[in-house]
Length: 227
Image 1 (tube, one colour):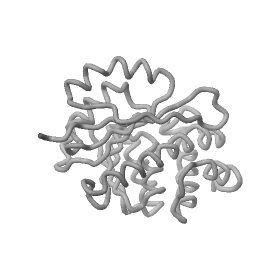
Image 2 (tube, one colour):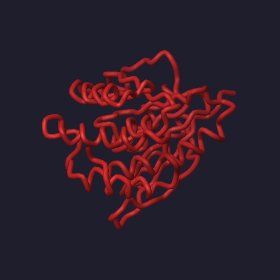
Image 3 (cartoon, rainbow, N blue to C red):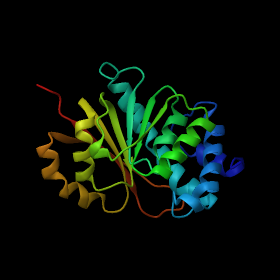
Image 4 (cartoon, one colour):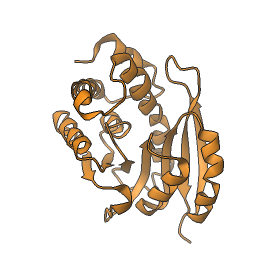
């Protein structure tokens, strides 16, 4: 299992606490991902150092942002918090969030059958009762309920994320988007889409993953409250 010093060091660098069982679940998840990656092409590079330093660290860096939104919006958020992960792929960040915060409900949406099968496999292996997996194109999905927060990592540009997420969010709900290089250009290009969808930028948090020389950021958008 991918535990040991590498995972321990990675988790030690995260600026928020995890639940006691989270480390074991994350180790099992990364082992499953490495095992199935060659067949399913879940990530471009499944070496341990890349999974830990690029994918896991990056996904976990957004946890403090999500914790803050959950705390500030507690009066309006349902219990448990409802989060939709758009274009879940191999599970970053949706599965990671579900393992780190088992008291939140995560719905993972992806259109590829093989990736959906992998997500279901990991959810069962890690006994994630807070995870639901949906096979659908995001724009074709009609969930019957709205989310408190939508998240996405490496899916599409910011304007596209705003367009996809707005129908899925409650009034006043948030989008939390993991972004790397090109984030400033995306912000400028998304201005018209945000205006048309009545969405505003709430916050931006910059950070760096281990062994990277450039800054990444989490961008928070908010859907306007209904009048």
